[in-house]
Amino acid sequence: MALSAAVAQAGDYGLAPFETAPGVYTFWGEQADLLPSNGGNIANAGFIVGAKSVLVIDAGPTRRYAEQMLDAIRATTDRPIIAVVVTHHHQDHSFGIPVFVEHGLDVIMHPGAAAMLVRDGDILLNFVTELVGAAWTDGTTIGAPTHPITEATSIDLGDRDVDVEIFEGGHTPGDLVVYDGATKTLFAGDLVFNGRVPTVPHGDVQTWRGQLVTLDKWDWRRLIPGHGPLVADRTVLDGMSDYLAFLEARVACSYRMGDSPAETLMAEVPDAYTGLFGIDREYQRAVLQLFRKYDETAPPPCP
Image 1 (cartoon, rainbow, N blue to C red):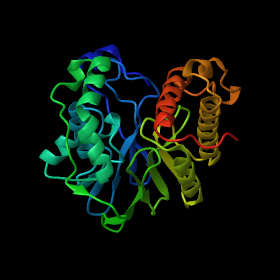
Image 2 (spheres, helix red, strand yellow):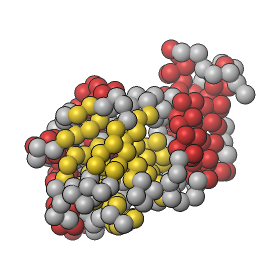
Image 3 (tube, helix red, strand yellow):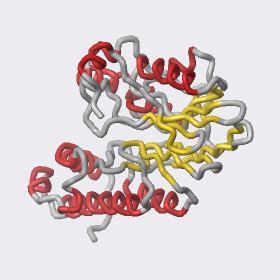
Image 4 (cartoon, rainbow, N blue to C red):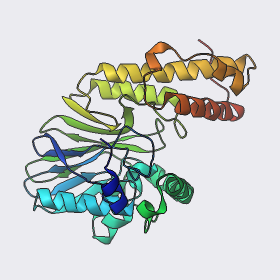
């Protein structure tokens, strides 16, 4: 739901945690573009409450978001926050990192994602500021994890063990997912988009599709995607994988036939994907990105 004009003007994200499962809370982002009306709040974040402590998932798109996120968590539970897991480096998930560090909290991230944040962070911050306005991004700086991990780990929140698993080279060089076995809830980050076109600027389609197969085999009842509503039907993963396969095949075949990106974009997108949020813009961007990639590495065989 879009923020009211009064709330947006005041710089208030209106964050209200929704209890998705017992002790598992989600801050649902808008299925929208980066806009002054939402301050960049387009991705899902959340937290898990154990008997002794709390684990946060993702840090949000701005300093202001992270500060309000902490306030909302503390209004929900008096148990201390032990750490925040940042699923990957993209701006809508990571720009609140410094706030958590300043509060003395562990920030867990994959080193590949941390390196990408260092490389691209300032560019992405300028991009976000241009789209949502400086009033939202004022004070936002690029942070770094305090606890980079390269192996899966388990975090004890007190009578509740939460697993952090690593997926490399699919959506980005280093994605993390968070699994709460007590409720069989999976925070999948941007490995899963629901109802929205997946973005591929730092990804490898074939690796990513393999990771979706892995996630599909896990024992979860509910999956919180990086973008879009709750996933309870596993066919959502199939549909996302099908889109990625279509995208790669369309561009690979066009490239091998000597077509230009403009000629590739003249072909219609199948009806199955026209209802995805952002299809016109993100599909065009993905075609251009894959063409650039294939200029450096050979495209896969045309099916």
